[in-house]
Image (cartoon, rainbow, N blue to C red; front, side, top):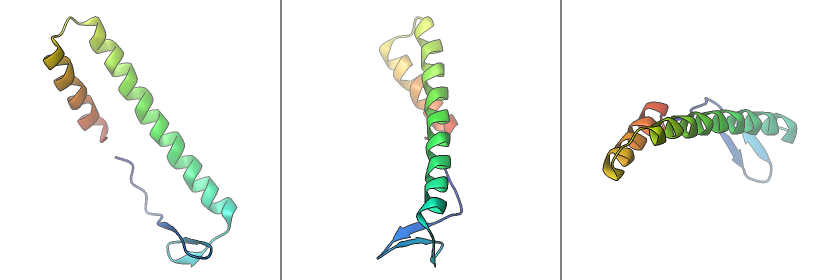
Length: 74
């Protein structure tokens, strides 16, 4: 799972860890999180494609997909 130490909130302006922050600083953090999430998703999809080559039953495929997701922290 994606974990960062930055806590972003909004209440009449952006706050980063309880301190006022400008939009550019917040956008950089969100962009980094987006890239990380896409990377994990791409890994998940690649592993699923490898599973498709094996002749698994639907139940085995479902369990294998869950194992992949668990391993990636999703």
